[in-house]
Image (cartoon, rainbow, N blue to C red; front, side, top):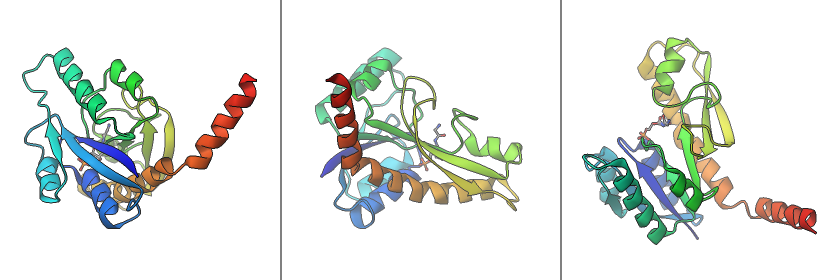
Length: 205
Ligand code: GAR
């Protein structure tokens, strides 16, 4: 069984959806949640995770020099050694040492097409630009802001939306299903890895 750590900074609705699927949905038997991590002690998601009986851990970034904060997080993650680090509304850029420590073991969900919009306010961007759809993106995390290799995208129809709230509601509903589906694929992708390894072996010889 694979071990995952979910990193959040706030509401934690994606974390909740994943936790639900780990408990009794498409991630049951695929992975277990080692812990939910937050850089904010008052993140609503931490409380929700605790109520669900999930271990939580907080290293507050508030008032800490970024170098200090980053090294504490890296130290903790190294000690936990998860198979996958799942960012779900974690609003801090990961430092290169952390990315290098966990190659292709960190994923993120973004509310828009990461080739068109990066950073915060993905739904605001879609709403303000009257986009007919948004493309939810799940991607590996690299050192840039939402620039890592795209794993999969899912288009969400935004036609007929009358408010930003409606855009966000439709988008989040899709995120909650899509992220777990992607995680299931990545965490069970034995044959893909084997094929890739065989190919690399062949190239080497
Ligand atoms: C989600 O919409 C997620 O896609 C977005 O933050 C929200 C977190 O909500 N992430 C980004 O914008 C990353 N650049 P949640 O805390 O309820 O899961």
